[in-house]
Amino acid sequence: GDSVTQTEGQVTVSESKSLIINCTYSATSIGYPNLFWYVRYPGEGLQLLLKVITAGQKGSSRGFEATYNKEATSFHLQKASVQESDSAVYYCALRVTGNTGKLIFGLGTTLQVQP
Amino acid sequence: GALVYQYPRRTICKSGTSMRMECQAVGFQATSVAWYRQSPQKTFELIALSTVNSAIKYEQNFTQEKFPISHPNLSFSSMTVLNAYLEDRGLYLCGAYRVRTEVFFGKGTRLTVV
Image (cartoon, rainbow over all chains, first blue to last red):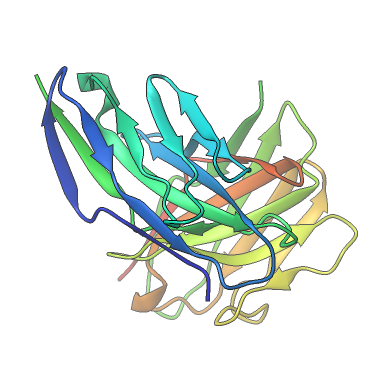
């Protein structure tokens, strides 16, 4: 079936350092997946951080970026210099085209940025 | 802007009882509403997708008999957890679709079963 695997548990990074959260996917359903990163700040709902619907393209938002790598089936999230306000839980997700709306999420990665 | 309100934010119910949660879309028309559950140590799982004027589509392992959903108009949906037990605890998230691929999520209803 379709699934998403991402860096597990908590990642702790010092402020101004770089970040990478790994995400790989498996899409066995018919169609090519659209890929997403969602973020959940403390006390808030899930918010879309960025999305890419075409293989080979890069999405970016708020200093974060992720490239849709179809060969490696990956969609790693990166940021060159994190801030304390980036502390949140990050979810990688896919939506199989042709499947109305259903998102398949990874387990989530908690980012803790230390001042 | 587009906002989605969910209530209650937290609720506790006794084992074997039922609880209803609501989802309100503000600032846009929600043609579809998806209900997800995040159980402890797990990720978000889709329970069902409801589209106005269409049948509600439940995912495997979730049934209408256990999670009845009402979606009477383009701004409101509710879901009830019937006969809740420990395995039903978790965070229930409502996602309202403005168009087929653009979804806005509420802050969730956290259900504790005692």
